[in-house]
Image (cartoon, rainbow, N blue to C red; front, top):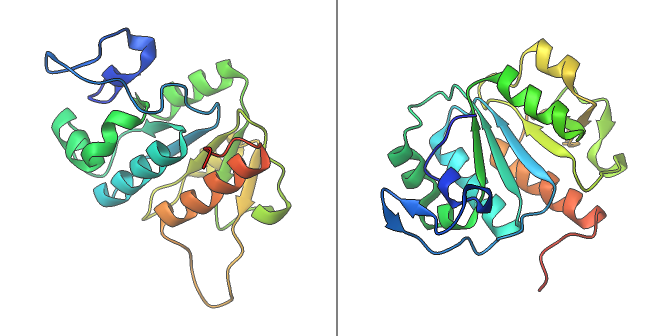
Length: 187
């Protein structure tokens, strides 16, 4: 796992967290849900930013599976996350294998969201420690990743349209998983 700007904000890294030597306030979400949002090689920085904001607002941790389709430096990550970076726990993985080893060791199910899904979102039953995986905006995920998934879930759409934006798909899916697991943030 690579360390990045936001990794320093994880309670697992010790306190006080720092950004380039400057002490930072602890994340608002100090105990993220067990549910995780995983992003496979994101290629649009704005969508990564939207997903980091989603994770911060709903209290889930994020896994970024590199390489990304843009340079993901600490500075770029901070810029992409804007002020929500302080509120989300992010783990960066050097590639699919690094992510997969950690995910398998955790015992969590890997739930892939794909237009080739076998189960509709409204029929799928989530578990509190599921890892919800979303592919690249431009190409989804390779067959190796499809094969590794414990479940492949489809968000039903009207005929004639291709797909939702990855950040929109993640928002719908993460919220539904948290709702089912009775782990939505309090009002």
